[in-house]
Length: 483
Image 1 (cartoon, rainbow, N blue to C red):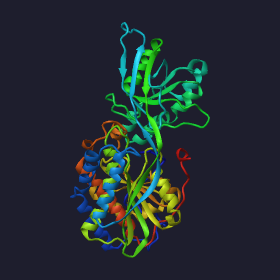
Image 2 (cartoon, rainbow, N blue to C red):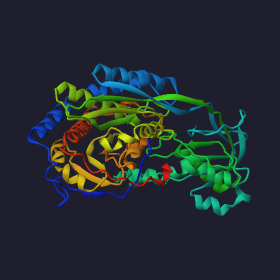
Image 3 (cartoon, rainbow, N blue to C red):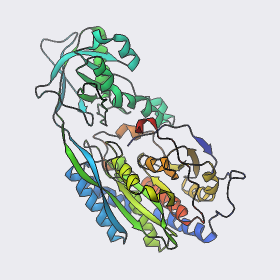
Image 4 (cartoon, rainbow, N blue to C red):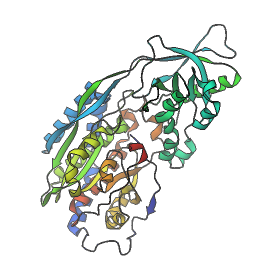
């Protein structure tokens, strides 16, 4: 997932924005009763957890272009057809990068006992190029920032392996700002290889982007720039990055690095799109979504099989309760979010003419922990319209409304086109402990909290499908990282 840090305006769930709510855009008592019915059904249902368990335990890792990902596409499509949805598979061309051997050893360092070496925990970053099969052995330069690297200059960097030991701010995360902590550190994952290569480095290693440590490597995509030599890029566990920095402060350190990933020809992936047709305005659409791909180190339970399972649960609950949404509820399992939002970009390209008829787009892509409310990407007046919905969600502790320019990850592409976007506001204090690591597994998901997320998203989706009028469409700027 790509976390987006934005300045937000927090609104009390019971507050109506004076003069901004159209009196006609009010849910009826029957609609509000339907929302309560959905909420109760969601809080008692394990449909989402059971689908999540199959995606993770039975299918496993779902790297874009992989057989596991293809199996997941077919599974989700089959399950949505069982619910009676009109399902289509939208073809998407995606990068096909495959992880190879990974090894890092300290082979010379201050205080070394004889010829003993120290094995480090390392993983390649997505899209990284490979070292030679025998690896690269070079002296290490350890820095904490891009500025510190620049001050060293080419003479002290060329021919060396750069290690960026930029710590993840766990205290910031514990204070409820995990996305901001991630944003500070992830810049080195995306830009470290380019910065190091510009000064002649032969490889770039970062401190893993996340908390908890436990010598867990965190993968994720890296980037290269036109005209800059592509060098191998990886992530060390937090403890090992700190070790390298300490040793380098005492004297020369030499490291042997082996990373042998391969980039294969692009593969054909698919967005899974399932429509629960609206009863009155079927051409108007509410998207409910998660992304189906994961990184390959684990089974991608919190990033983002949980989001896909909850989106499927929305359709299941509406069907099971016998409710009939006025607008079409469209369940989407996005393709290839991790390597660069390929699925959502493809969707927006194909459905560009239909975006004005999209009533809203929801995505859950920040884990599966307890939701405290809904983030709104769009006009501030939307919060006033949704205040009665928030009052219902408050019964399960999810009544906060918060506005920003954009919400979600894949749905940002729709938001740029003006569609109101939404995401659950979740407790993310522990999310980046497991995000993109070998520990992103089913046991990290609490069954009750998953139900709470399903309740919040089901209620929101049905409300958007029931409003007398669509919410205002306001095109938003494209974030710099998407340009």
